[in-house]
Amino acid sequence: MLRYFTAGETHGKCLTVIIEGVPAGFRISLDEINEQLARRQKGYGRGGRMLIEKDKAEILSGVRGGISLGSPIAMRIENRDWENWSEIMGTEDSNGEKSVEFPRPGHADLSGGMKYDHHDLRNVLERASARETAARVAVGALARQIVEPFGVEFLSRVVSIGDVTDTADTSAPDFYEKAAASPVGFGDDAAAKRAMEYIDNIKANGESCGGVVETTVKGLPAGLGSYVHYDRKLDARLAFAVMSIQAIKGVEIGMGFEAARRPGSEVHDEIAYTDGAFFRLTNNAGGIEGGMTNGEPVTVRAAMKPIPTLYNPLRTVSIKDKTEHNASVERSDACAVPACAVVVEAAAAFEIANAFTEKFGGDCKADIEAAYNAYMERIRNY
Ligand code: EPS
Image (cartoon, rainbow, N blue to C red):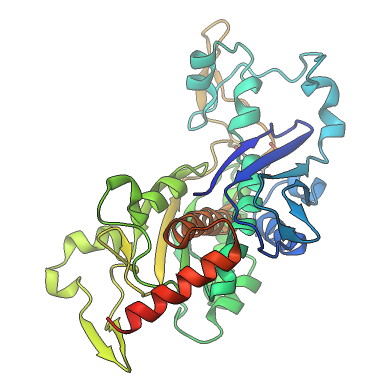
């Protein structure tokens, strides 16, 4: 079983993660981790912070000569912006500058302040910030290296930004390449242009916007997860992992909420058998039935709300004198939806790797390979 912790404030020295349970013998590429971190920094509508950062992970333990040792893997991502904040965010001394008094509607500010008895809301926002998603992307980028040798592939796209939806056919052979190259993660160029105009308009009005993102995981065998216990159901774990990402307000697997509006015959995927393998004629279930993979691609969709920092701020109340005031304005992104697709993909990668190591578990890659091959052989003869 894999687990991880992250630590770090958005303007602190660095983000740190410890991942435990990575079996020995897997090739761990730092370049691949850094590629994923670079993907997270892109996208139309990002703010000034992404011009400062050039996120790079450093592996501090648990890997030797590019191979996992089976011991906890620690990683660190430096915050370049730290040099502008060291006197404010120092762990020993702080000059207390840039204190935050006006909680932003939609952010963790007010409830977090009340909960931890913070009277400078910077103590909340520093950790609640989506900066932490850089650490999660590093975790997912490492975890996917456990399953990729078994032919598992992760693909992502942006479904919509605000009220602009991508109209491209996702089954076109070059769809995901186009989506990856698009500044808004769309496959259709005209829709992408509309989405960028939408973001420009949002920005010009001091607004922010959200959107819907989707991750698809291909190459998974049937039987990952479980129908036996609620906390081993793969859809439940994916939903938990994705919902825990900053600004996510909804998660769907496959057809999701639409399934509730249609009769059973239009929802359930009929079963067929060819060349010694079962398969489905459709994939409305999003590759998961009864909490387990069914051999079809797994699809997870997530709804991201608009980022709560508005340059044209909403009304709030001072935590000090309780007078009405405009909410605080922290530097922010007008739109971080394309980045969110990368974060959802990383969260899914961790959960998939977790379910994979649970099913084929072992201390090292050789044990996992043996268990995987034996299982694949057995289900081929089912
Ligand atoms: C982010 C870094 C943050 C924000 C953003 C995401 O950096 P800064 O606060 O220095 O601009 O840009 O986070 C939020 C807007 C938020 O409200 O959480 C990042 O690295 O993705």
